[in-house]
Length: 552
Image (cartoon, rainbow, N blue to C red; front, top):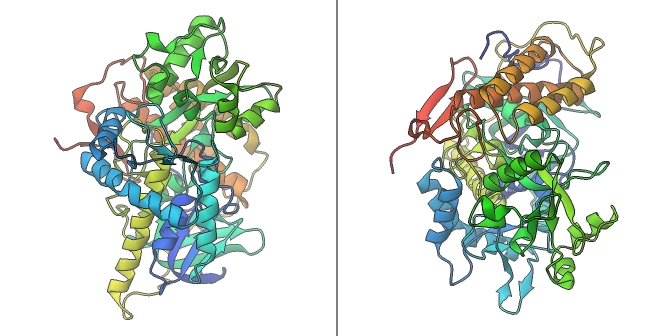
């Protein structure tokens, strides 16, 4: 990567004597499933503060439709779920991580049920769905196609009962605060109080993904990669940033939000057809519509190019209409708003950025390589997903790693004892002292829209060395005049975060000269054995750091 575009360590100048201070044992940045599960795992003797950009009901977890994968059917086996995850992951999963997470899944699903989650049932118990890449029916779901909403309802209610837990809504995290190579908390901002330094004995990052870096995305507006940028500036390691998963079926209607059409629709028997009504997936993969997401997304892209049409279509007209409306009420209602009947009409779809596989490097308990900082959920690279996430393993990862990170952070604090380093407010090394420059006639919305269009066009489902180098040149140009500025509100800070994360994603995609999982290089169409490795990055360290996976 070019020199001079990393930007300053902190986005804004701040003086510890000029801002309010708050103290907590465990600071959790992010109020989705991973963040709240981490909060609930913290020992009740310790105080917990959860910071969320909006409120607890606007996270990406709320948007999850498909469900949670877990072996709860006696005819299924842990080894089957492990094998499916490893196959989808394209050789980059950590087998020990996969095995441990899969074996923990039934207990985490049972825990949600005990907390009041109402999963869909049939006469035999839990109704289990099947999605792309799964060899068995093992997806528990709720309200047909609104699993995330129901799971978050139950978890939020549980969190609200915790006396040691405090939530700060509508609060933007500007930066992690570090001293002597350790994370000490964060600098946050909200409209009512301005900047506040939140000092914490341990900090857990659970800020979600980065789908909003793309023009076409299933993610909510807040999924702008903020947590990855926070970790990068603070000195944590990020890896696998080239792996953005594109969901194959995103509703594509002019004027409509890019809403995900759950994979369970294809699991129930829906076909993908081109503009002439021809089913095409069997020519690309023997699993047809139930192939993994990377395979289906690339097939759709090929067909769109071949037919010179902006989308393909989901066709459910051969299925029982009553079943379709009963299983997918949310999708049926959404389609109705555009004059479409999910059960009878062809539904226009195309791929959209859906899930960030790469992120902050963590170990089995969520520890990052920056002491004092843990992370869980989509913001991380845990070794579970490899080069392509298996459907419905995302909520599972948030549950498992949220619980582990919260418990591990609490255990470290309790091990320090009452005489341990409790609340330290040191002088911050190298705070910014330059004067705020503000927007200075910069059209931030225009830069953001240009970035998202560029990422979709040149760093999308298919990439080439040429398209990536052109994208990097453009992004680094924007970085040079956007990153040095000081902004006064989240619109500017979020754009700076997006630019830093986009730069890392593009640089990683340039480095990996092969096709693997969701990373498809048209100029390097085959996987290469020397790239069974992570591509990692750390601020101030000449990159990339290529880390080969250990042999199984």
